[in-house]
Image (tube, rainbow, N blue to C red; front, side, top):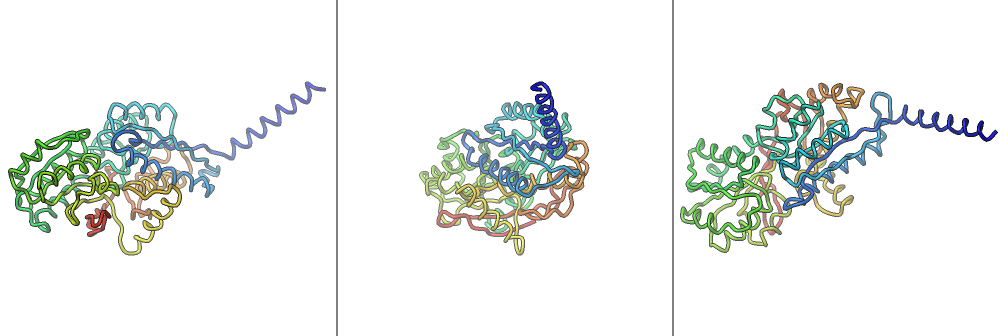
Length: 380
């Protein structure tokens, strides 16, 4: 009798397990960003954006191909280091993720992209802006922000035409992102009739800029452009003030964060910093972004730094392609993802071109007043 009961119990367990398996589809979404190191605040911001999207998708009860999907976030830390970036990319491939959102930096996104391409896993970067990322011919690579050619070019033209920069100095941190955006900025300055009077280089872990800023000061610049991240830009601004350099300070989205005033130790003058963020909304779309930021603060107790809304959109665009394809299998939904058109996200309307770049990507120009970031304009 006991044996019969055990057999029945086993059969019941198998039946229940089989039913659950038939109904539930586990979808693993990988996310990679630097959640340790100098820009951990940006990596955590990205991860929070992914977590917010995943939690909402699970609450909605999304179905893919007739099965209820259960989304799992596999979050990894690449510490903004290319070697660690490729290591965690391999880890996610081994975990058989259905898609990857990330990485944050161009320097980690580009080497990792080959690993995802070789495995046939779709990858959407919410923040890597170096043009090389989507120009390698990988069908799996996408991004939801404008690239450095657009971002650096817009800032270069702004420096000469709007800020009337006559003597312009350019500094970069030699990373794939920093060097890339600085070169695009310098090209646009020259094309706009301006001239770059000084080029200097640092690295993404430097804290002392006395030597390079002294060389820059000798040229009496009215504009200084820095290609790099806020963790370096903050101390640089502080040392500029100590050396009596009153030039306008410009940079890309890497410096355009909520933490920049704090990182500069309150040394920024009102309107001194002009930066650009890849992306931007205006008019009716602005409400969606404002609502997202309010929901983010309620959920995590902190303000959005910069990229979280783009991560949120990237997750949702990827899942929308799975739903439309009726499958979370990368090879089935990848062609659908590539044809994304007219997706209404909190960061604006998303469509991809043949390279995987966002079409008609917007940029938002910002400055800082009273320690707060203020929008100047949205440009395309």
